[in-house]
Picture 1 (spheres, one colour):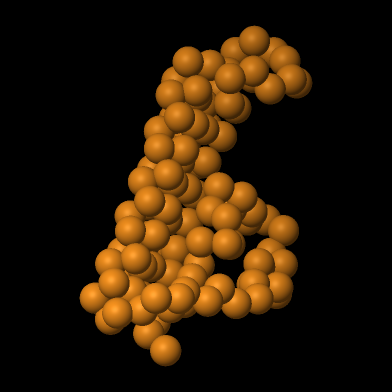
Picture 2 (cartoon, one colour; picture 1 turned 180 degrees about the vertical axis):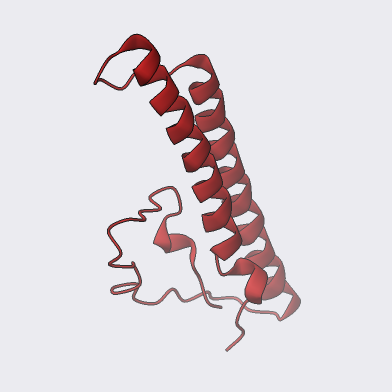
Length: 108
């Protein structure tokens, strides 16, 4: 079995997403205080950050899957088996990283 190295474990991506979410939260808090509203309304800066965050996630998933395929090709692997991902998700309710699908954590 060939496993991927540490750079593919998703922790760097989780950190980047947390940074984006924190920035978006700060902007949201400022906007809600400014307009004295309880409802969420995305400002241009927030939309730009959300778009950038999604781009970073898409790039990470693309490069990780490309790296997996390159490793498989270099080892003449013709079949990639994906295991059961039940129980991988953290039960910590304070941090939900829904931007990174668990289906992309793969072993070759």
